[in-house]
Image (cartoon, rainbow, N blue to C red; front, side, top):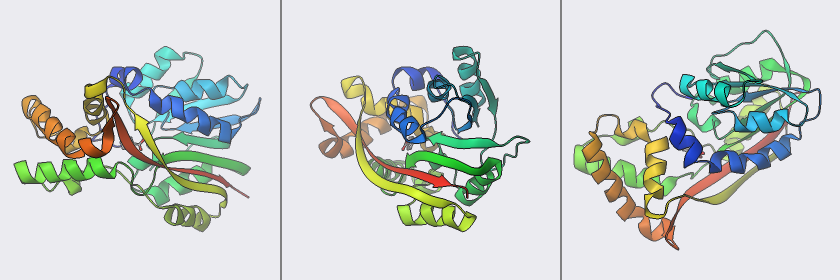
Length: 255
Ligand code: BEZ
């Protein structure tokens, strides 16, 4: 995950726990088997690495954030976790599978990530991932960039840390690398936030802090309220915020 993002691990685990919950479906697609060696790229605080390990596979978790890795080690001391940058990493060992949930959209150099994944996979190995696809969190990004532009004359698109490709773009990257793409879907998944009115603030505070890096805490609250007002009609119903997630899910094999 990128250097500019500051991770609040308590908020991540307590209020944004849907990340790991939805990730269980991606673990199903991975279908880990006893004895396999699996690398979890962007493992966060380790919940899915732990789920994978329960199947009898050996998992190693990597994340760019030292805070995330520190917390993962405390939660799951029997699993090996290390800090690493998926856009740059090289390892001496190889794996039967590489898994990634809700992390690849933080890595703008996707071509390099795909090459690095390829390099650590055994022949016959699989890459299974889910992340944000084209259109992901569109309404929130638009409201955020508009408000920052109007109130602070900030060209916020430049601060946007995310890469949300369409299926053809990402499949093409995988195929160019030599992967056989056996599964690729893009789907809407409106995602329920916790805590009623507070839900959108949890999301902005947990995930979007690079947009607000130069804004005081006081102004941030005002901005969050303005953003909420702009997206409320589309994203708030039944006293609950639903973030406009769009996912890409892929499975690709290294021949
Ligand atoms: C996502 O999981 O799609 C996501 C999470 C945080 C920021 C942007 C997208």
